[in-house]
Image 1 (cartoon, rainbow, N blue to C red):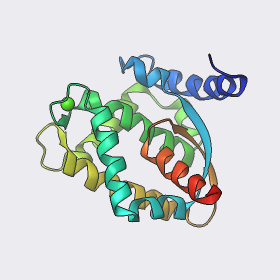
Image 2 (image 1 turned 180 degrees about the vertical axis):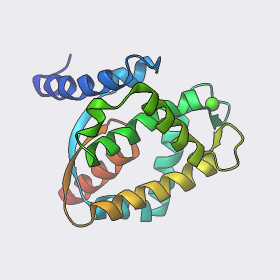
Image 3 (image 1 turned 60 degrees about the horizontal axis):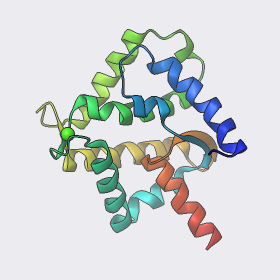
Image 4 (image 1 turned 180 degrees about the horizontal axis):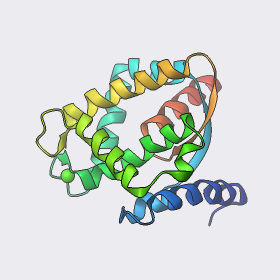
Length: 173
Ligand SMILES: [Ca+2]
């Protein structure tokens, strides 16, 4: 059973996800992904990335969770959930434009982000490609945020959520 707060958070967050992904044939898990709103600033993310051992553990855990067929690489289909969580970030930064954005545009965007991950163009993303691009992407987000904390809608299990959790654990320790 969900408690009342969880239900409220879910309703807000999944309505956004459903609007973006319902016609794309994307995974059921993604549409059901549990979301939460977290306060994040540049240091939250940078400290997470720079804590190398813990960052590597987080990346490997996330990679394993995305690698549904366990063949050691992430196909486009397996990456879609991750691309959608990046998409939420982008939504955060350019608020209103997404309302009018076509599905085709979204697919094109997912394709180009996937190509950034797939550095050797093999058609799948291996662990090192995933780690490298994830690190760069997170550091770019951290730089963009700077010192100003912002509220982000984060997916349970995503690396940004892990960064936020790491920080709150440190703050309450
Ligand atoms: Ca795979």
